[in-house]
Length: 196
Image 1: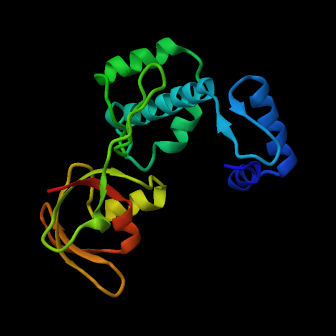
Image 2: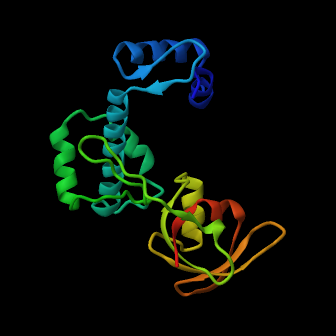
């Protein structure tokens, strides 16, 4: 990623993004050279992994222990992930029974910030007659999660592909007590899981 890409993604000015990257480079978290792609150092990768761990544990806690739905937790977790107490997150992890995934199916990094990314198939790669188990979502935006809720789709749902529309790649599927539902191509590309 370039500094320009970063400034665009964060909606900040280039000089601000450049200044931020220089500070992170001084702390040994990122390799920064003008006009070259940014790259996290090994220390930067570990720190980033630990922040992701806090975020995903918090999302899981909010869903499992506080009754929040999966589309409500992201913004709260962004605030809690900046708590500096390792003991707080160790106890949260223990209270949750040491989960390995968050409510959206994303893997939770370990205590060292390491994470194994599972190899998933996309629902959009399936053909008529295929069976598919929904294990994660590639898009955890509030809008997409509302869309899934409106279709009563959640993790661990067994989906059968009934047909695939040649024109727009939309799929007619069945799952649970839903005998037939149509999912658009964009939704199918963001549903991750296992075929068979």
